[in-house]
Length: 148
Image (cartoon, rainbow, N blue to C red):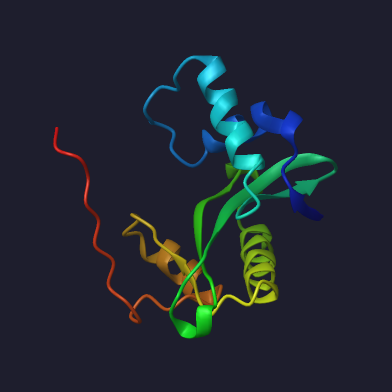
């Protein structure tokens, strides 16, 4: 098992992994747009896309974004998003290892907190995040979406 930043040339592997996150998702835009977004992501020093590899195959991933902050002694905070493990590799501790890596990274950047949201109501998913060190009762999230 190896955890590292997903590299520029691994976009297709990451997109294939994301099919295990949202089997039914909005279609991707034209390839040049996808590649432009990917270049913006990997070029942003505040955004990291971590991948967990088994035998050089990307089997799990999450993104973490560091946010500069003027409170809490000017310490940043972090958001984790797009946590996914390939369905054939679930239940082996890879998700927990990946989240531990992301949190260790955030603490190394002097973040005062790391946040993660899930739309899942599955009790097993909620227990997974709690076992990874996240408290679902600490804060309340509110989501706004653009009008249809």
